[in-house]
Image 1 (cartoon, rainbow, N blue to C red):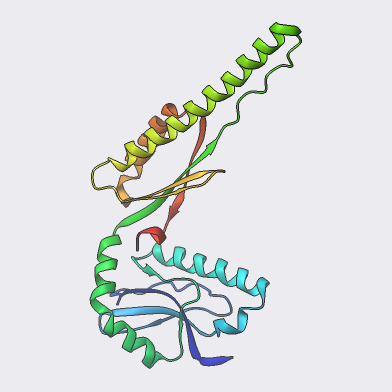
Image 2 (spheres, rainbow, N blue to C red):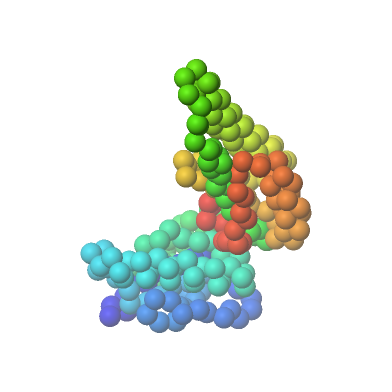
Length: 226
């Protein structure tokens, strides 16, 4: 174990109250105090040595997310990119001082706010009964089935576009969108006390999107807004 390496989870304003520091990958994390900014670190982990060990990388990623979540329940922290580490406390202190204003501004931006993820999963059209007609009636029935599928897809696309536009136009609501074929994720950054408002909105969004299954995922640290 090389105690000169400090795997770094997050930065935060130097706390005026004690924090409950969680367990990291191999040991309990530490708080390294700066003048006004501090860092949450785990000593003795050389991230480069884990690169060829997929199992350890997965464990480290899970640990990274868990530590940040546990800390964010206690105070506002600035989550760092997975794999961030410093080779000494001196290097860490120099970094904090040189980026002081940038990190203070980011912490202020997310202070008292929580990230929620709205997930949209497309529903599949109902399976149509086999066409038993023959001749011209068979082709007419198949055409109607095809048109029904087309209408379903068009309605689905319209509902998604309308919902995204609606959310984007909510005044001063930070939004980050990942639009993929299998699902759509809309990340929202809201004030922590506005959770009831969000739940009410979620119910109305469900009603406006009958061709989608909507899920509101647990609150997260603001990974997508830093």
